Amino acid sequence: MNDVNLNVRVNSKLKSDSEKLFKNLGLNMSSAINIFLTKCVRTSSIPFTIEEETPSKKLKHALDEANYMEKYPDLFKGYNSVDELFQVLEETSKYGDKE
Image 1 (cartoon, rainbow, N blue to C red):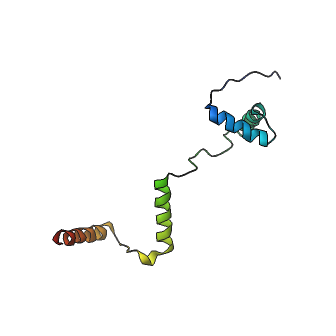
Image 2 (cartoon, rainbow, N blue to C red):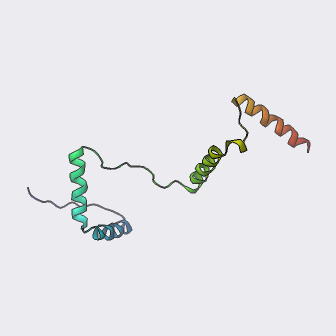
Image 3 (cartoon, rainbow, N blue to C red):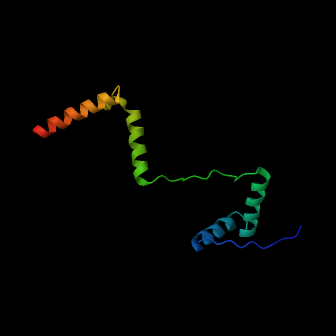
């Protein structure tokens, strides 16, 4: 089978970081890309999940808060319905207006 050249545009930092990683793994860029393409063809898929791995700071804070609330449910008020929640919010708002 004949080899052909493949030209791909990537960010220079990504290229540099990738080359360092592949060197540490005993590979060069060409070998790494060949491994990736071979795996794609053999499995008829992308060989990894494509997703955002690192949540934003805001999402991480919200997840931490939700985990804390789940771990210590007795510290937080629960509601049986949305109507009950809105009633409490309305009452709280009324009390806040009087102060």
